[in-house]
Amino acid sequence: MQQLRAIIESNEPLLPGTGILWLRAPDVARAAVPGQFLLARCGDGYDPLLRRPLSIHRIKPGAGAEGSIAVLYSQSGAGTAYLRSRRPGDELDIIGPLGKGFTVHRSSRNLLLLGSGWGLAPLIALADRETAAGRNVVLLAGAASAGQLYPPARLPPEVELAVATEDGSAGRKGAVVDLAEEYWAWADEVYACGSTAMYGNLALRTAGLWPRKPVQVLAEMPMACGVGACYACTIETRKGPRLACKDGPRVLLADLQL
Ligand SMILES: Cc1cc2nc3c(=O)[nH]c(=O)nc-3n(C[C@H](O)[C@H](O)[C@H](O)COP(=O)(O)OP(=O)(O)OC[C@H]3O[C@@H](n4cnc5c(N)ncnc54)[C@H](O)[C@@H]3O)c2cc1C
Ligand code: FES
Image (cartoon, rainbow, N blue to C red; front, side):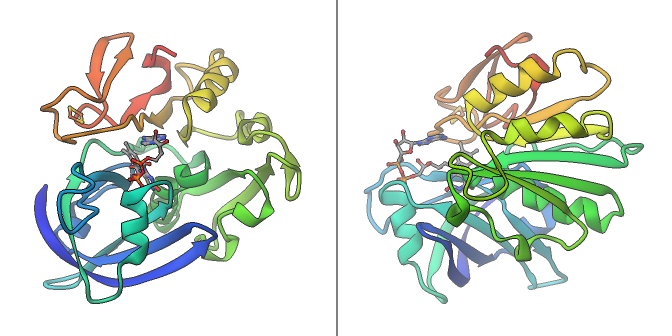
C-alpha cells in the first residue's frame, strides 16, 4: 500500500453519469488484486474532507515505470463530481491498494460473477484476470434500464454475459440474482458485488449450496480512514465484528449477518 499523486492518463464517459479514469500507478498496478480498492482525495482543498473509496476496476501491470489502474466512478455527490472534472495530465492523490481482494481456488474452472451498477467495477477486474488464466467466466450484469448497462464490447471476449434490467428494457426483467438459477450447478465459485438487499437475496438462494460453492461478496460499507483505524466500516459477521476496509471488503456471504 502506498500514497502517491498518480497522473491521470484518460478520463472518459462510459454511461450517463459514469466514467472511467485511468491512472499511471506502476507500483499499485503490480500489487493490486481484483476486489481491492483505492482511497482517492476528491478535492483540491478540504472539501470533501474524507477520501472516497473506489474499487480497482482494471489493472494493466507493466515493467519499470509502466503500469496503470482504472477506476469506474458513478457520479453521486461532490467527490465523484470532482473525479468527473479531472483531465488527462492532472494528478490524483490516492492510497492503495487497500483491503483484501477476491481469492480463486486453484482447482476452480467455472466462475460465476454477479453485479449491478458500480458493483460491476471490481468484478470486471476479476473477469480480466481469470479469463487470461484460462478459466470460464459467466458475468450476470444488472442495471435499472438498458441505457445503464455496462457496454458488452468492453468485456473480455471470452466472458459469457447475461443481463437483467429492472424495467425489462434489456435482458430479463428483474433482479440480476434471478438470472443465477441456471448457473448454480455449473459454477465452482460465485462472486458478487452489490447492495445489502442483493446479498440477502443471494444468501436465501445459495443457503443449500454452501459449503460446496463458496460465495464471496464485497462489503462496501461507507468508509472514513480505509485502513482499520476509525471503525466506521464495522460489519457484523458470524465470527464477530470485522472491519470492511481491513478484514474485507471480501467476505464469505455465509459469514455475513444480514
Ligand atoms: C470498498 C468500496 C468500493 C467502492 N467502489 C466504488 C466504485 O468503484 N465506483 C463508485 O462509483 N463508487 C464506489 N464506492 C462508493 C463510493 O465510494 C461512494 O458512493 C462515495 O461516497 C461517493 O462520493 P461522493 O462524494 O460522490 O458522494 P457522497 O456525497 O459521499 O454520497 C452520495 C450518496 O451515496 C451514498 N453512499 C456513500 N457511500 C456508499 C456506499 N459505500 N454504498 C452505497 N451508497 C453509498 C451516500 O449515502 C449518498 O446518498 C465504493 C465504496 C466502497 C466502500
Ligand atoms: S474505514 Fe476506518 S476502520 Fe474501516
